[in-house]
Structure formats: C-alpha cells, structure tokens
Amino acid sequence: MAENDQDNGNDQENGNGEDEQDARATRILTDIAPRAWEHPADRAALAALRKIPVFDDVLRALFGFFGEKPIRLAFLASSVRVSERQFTRVSHIYQDVLKTLDAPKEYPLFISQTPIVNAGAYGMDEPFVILNSGTVKLLDDEQLAYVMGHEVGHIMSDHVLYRTMTVLLIQLASMGFPIVGLAARAVLVGLLEWSRKSELSSDRAGLLAVQNPQKVMSTMLKMAGGGDDDETSLDEFIIQAEEYRESGDVADQVFKVLNLMGQSHPFYVLRLAEIRSWIEEGEYDRIIRGEYAHRGDPERAYNEDLTDAAKAYADSAKDLFGQVAGAAKRMADDLMGSVKR
Image: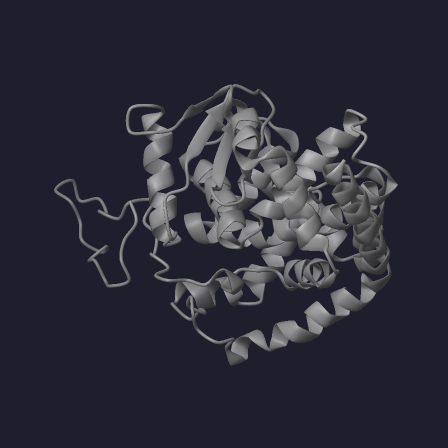
C-alpha cells in the first residue's frame, strides 16, 4: 500500500510487537515529471529521431493507415482486462504502482495467455499495458510491481507511439509486407537504436514504482534466466554485470552486435549495471527524498549535468540518424504514393 509524502508513523508496532510498516510501502512521487527518470541516451536518441524531417509524420501516417482501433484489437483479441474482479491480486498491485508514480490516468491493463516472460505498453491516443501470463506466474508481487512500473514509465515518457510502430514494422517486415521496403527497414534500425535506450529510462521508472533496488535486480535476474529464487544467486548476477560495467569497450561492442541482431531491448546484465550506476550516483535517493522535477516545471539546474552526456550520445549516433533521415523521406514518398493510389 502506498503512503503519502508525510510521516505516517511507520515506526509504530502492532499488538504482536511487529513493525506495522508494510513491505510494499512506497513514497508517492506527487506530480513527478518523466524527465526525472529519463536516461540521457534515451532523451538524446528520441530528440534525434524527432529532428528528422517527416519522421513523426511517417509514423503517424502509417499508424493511421492501419488505424488505432484495429491495432488495439490485434493486441487485445486474446487478452483479459484486469479489474477488481479479474486478476484481483494484479489489479491491487497495479493500483499501487499508478498511485506511487502519480500517473495522470489509469491506463488499461490486460493479461495475455503467453508463456514467454514479457510485458509491453502500446497505443497512441489511448495507451495500454499488456502482461504475459508467464510474467505473472514467475514474479512475486514486488517484482511484478517493477515490471508494471516500467511499462507505465514508457507511457508517461511518451514512448508508446514509437514502441508501437517498432513492433508493427518488425511484424510487417517478417511477413514480407510490401510497404516495408529498404527505406522502412532503415527507419526501423533507428527506432531499434532508440528503443534500447528507452528501456534504461523505464527501468528507473520501475525502480521508483517499487522502491526496492534488490527486488528490481532480482526481477532482471529472473527475466534473463528464469528460475526460482532458491536456485539462483543475485550476488553472482551482480558480479556478472560488474564484468561488463568494468569493460566499457565490451558494452559498446554489445550494443553494436544488438544492432545487427535487430533487438529492441539491451541485455539484462547491461540493464542491471545501468540501474546500479544510477543508484550509486545518488539520483534514486534524491528522487525518493522528493528532489525531482515536477510536471510543468522548467528544466532545473540538476538536469544540466545530463546535457553533455546527451550531446555525446547524439554526436556518436549522428551518422546512424543521418541515414535514417534519408530513409524516412523515401518512406514518406512511398507511403504517400501508396495512399494516393
């Protein structure tokens, strides 16, 4: 159960002499702005995409070509909407997550009968969250809260249009759909490049939703390899992540390999290393203390230290997004020509 920003007497004891504090107690992050958790690489990559002429127009036109409602139905046809009477446990956890992140609205949540452990946030004007049934079965309450907070973070950071189009383009490309030619594939490469960075932002949102770093890292361990808590070791997984973090060149090479593999998510080992770095830099504790950007606030001074990192990433990706810009224009011409015919 989430608590408000005031002291609520968590040091009291109940009649059994036990602490009354709920293990799920979290600080409500009232009116928090998504930029408080956004990774500079995510913000820089998304800014680079949005600067590409006609890029947003292409995606919205393609989205409109299929229509939002059919896309929603395609995602939701075999899913069950979570409510007080459907998946009650999940519904209660989700309500806590929405309250903790002070989400502007309650986004519909669905569970799909899929054994693969995964989740997603999709849509454009009406975003929604889907949990695979395998995720619900594998994770405990706090781990599930992290996953749901991660997906709500995607929605609040306005990632969903790009994420939905990434999935749609991947599916169309795999089906050999004629609208997905070489230009569209180049656009997809740009989307995948950004998508991997956006996961780092939403990992932070998930941590803020559950406010338990150990649970977040244990979730990453389960998502990476499955298994029960009694047959895995988080300490060993952290050591594995440290091997990557101490070898920056290795991490860079992994991202290049992921580009070739067409992956939308970075490896969980890298994600664990990234979230540990964010915690160790003090950013997580600062937000929990209430020192964060609020919606509608101008950029604060503490965000200035992100500028150089964002610029460095934008410069390193200049060639990639330059190629995507040309591809986006060609795709726009092809798409508009198809619509006119």
